[in-house]
Image (tube, helix red, strand yellow):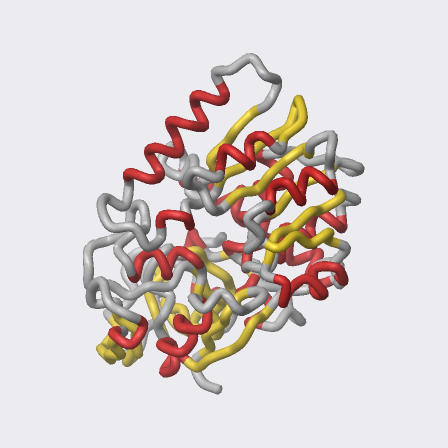
Length: 353
C-alpha cells in the first residue's frame, strides 16, 4: 500500500450504538458525537453494513473473554467506504470499499480504522452479503482448512449449522465434497437439506445418539461452539485421526461469574485430551491467534482467507445467509432477533433502511 504524507479529513458527526453495561437489548443507547480527525496510519470508514454475531450477545452479558470495560460501542466487523485518511495513509484509498475486523466499534455510522487492517471488497459484491462472510467466513474457512484440514470424502459434524458461522461452514464443506451432519432446530432442517446437510434436532436429548446412527464409524471432525459438559460427547463422536475444533462457550452464556473461567476450563480439557495416545486431536480456534506475535503476518492471513471466501461468493459457490436487515437506529430489534435463536444466518445492520 503506497504511503503518502497527505491527509484528507473533514468534520464528521458519527452515530453510534453504545452498550452501557449489563443490560437487556432495550438498554442500548444511541449517541452522536464529532469523530476525531484520523491519526497517523488511520482512515475514516463510513459504514455500509455491520451485523450481530455471538460475541455481541456475550458482551451484553459481560461474558466475552476479553471485552473492554463498559461503556463501549460493540460491532465485530463491517464493510464501509473510506471517506478520509490521516497522515501516512494513502489518499487513493478515499472512495474505495473495504472490510475490517474491529472486535468492537463497528455499530457506528463512521469510525476510525487502521489502514493496515483494511481488506478490499471487489466490485459487484453487495455490502450486506460481504458483511456476512467477514468474521463468519474467515472463521469457517480457517477452521475447515487450516485447523481441521478436512479433505474431500470425509464426514464432519457442525453444531448450530443454521448460525452465522455454521451456515457458512456447511456450505464450504459441501463445496469441498465433504459429508456434513448439522444440528439445528427442526424449523431449519429443510434449509439444511437444500444445502446437502443431514440435519439433526439439537433439542433432542438423544442428539448425539442420532448423530452416531448417521455415522456409526465416527466422524473426521466436529465443530463445536457450545462448550460446556457436552463437549465430551463431541469428542466421543470422533473416529481415530479425527479432530475436534472448539470455537466458543455458548453453554455458559447465561451463567453468572467470571467470564474467563469457562474458557480456561475448556482449554484444560482440550489439553488433557491431546495428551492422550488415542490418535485424535482437540483445538480451540481463536480468530486472533498469532496477532500479538506478528500483526503483519496475521493480517496477511486474514486478507488471504477472506479473499478466498469472496471468490466463492462471487462465483455462486457460497451464498451469504442474511437472516434480516435492520437500520442502525433499530439495533435493539436486530440484537433481540439475533438472540431469539429463530434465525438462519446473520442479522445485518445497515445505516438506513
